[in-house]
Length: 112
Image 1 (cartoon, rainbow, N blue to C red):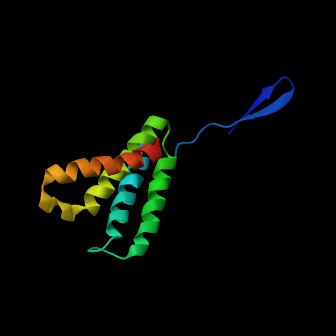
Image 2: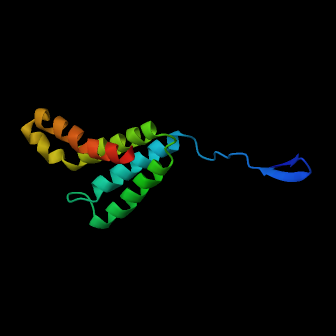
Image 3: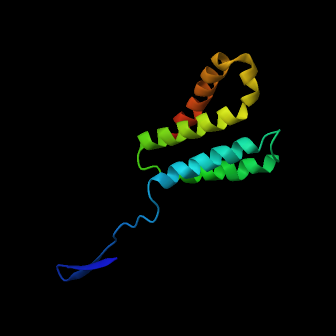
């Protein structure tokens, strides 16, 4: 915080502090997607969805623009759904890839 005198008054100018690099938001979103996918059967207990969504929202809060929020949402959605519907790979990638993209688009729209 810098104190700057302005016409007889004292003005306080706050300098922005970036304690976390921009990549931290992406890492929080990635961690949230992995934890959220682990909350479903085959891996872990259902209560893991709460910290997973909290990590996603914390990472989304760090987005500096709508475009970055869109990317964070898409990153979460694609990672989460690709880990969630692994069992659908028995039908082939032609069934999995479009479904993951369409479902990930909902999270991308939320991040935007």
